Length: 255
Image (cartoon, rainbow, N blue to C red):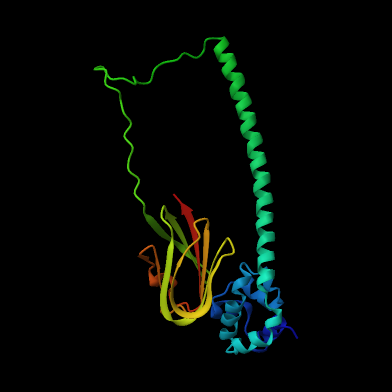
């Protein structure tokens, strides 16, 4: 029997419903159903398959590490994860391409209408030019534009909790430095460009994030003592509540 159906059988033998399992594991019902089918590539982020299985098995008092080792051939390989992400990105690109083509057609249509109205107005003297302000003062002094100095800064906003995922928005004009400190635990830090910064059991680390990344994903097996700092801004540990296995999603907007 494969891992997914085996886990489902153990849950049903324990008399635990999907609703109860979701409450115990803090995993979404859809995530639990994907795990129980064994279609791990259908997870929102297949890289987190091991951590999700550990959280599932912990709720049933099963030895998750032993099951992962026994069924490791069924778990997504790095190559499969990359191919799945590329397919997802390609689908997103095709959707964006169609949307941009549609938007371009709308803009072109509006431009044509505007140009026709402009011609009609010019022929009928409907439009007259009026100066809004003088570029030169009454004393002959040239009016200068004052440019405000832009200061580099980073703002981090906690959006909310989605199941076991803490969602943050990062707005910054600076390079991103990501660091953490905790007791020894399994860590996984990646971005939307398939950059793998770390996947190991460690207690602390500091990493410079790719300047082109727009999304940062951070998974922690045991977050009870986790402290995260981004560009010298420390996240509030109370955001994660009492959850143990935690997934962080950082949406990055460059100024």
